[in-house]
Image: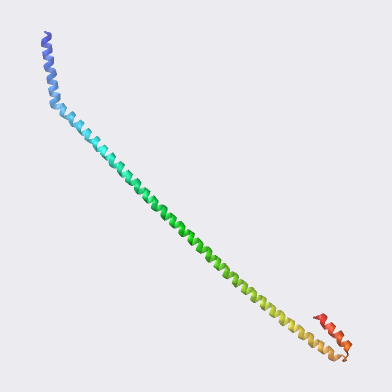
Length: 156
């Protein structure tokens, strides 16, 4: 065998295999590469969209947080106002209750003073009647009168 014939046969075999690969294998390889490129491009586009959506979601979250903070501050302010109202109402109620208690105490003091006055009047009238009775039983004498009056003054 000659080296030239081997080269020619190997060349023909090489070109036959190359032609078969280009005819039957290459389109599948190119299609797979193009499909992969398309998937990568779609993935990159989806990543860009996801990043945009994430930025929008973060912006929306920040807005919602601001709104929630504003609402929380409003609720806290309302709670402070309500607490102040409750404290003011309790103060007013306490003042009214104190005035009522004071009025009751003054009425009790007035009633007790009136009872004491009535009791004192009763005792004075009893003593006056008793003194007059004693004066009438004794002789009318200045010294006896004076002694009796001193005795009555001591009893009062």
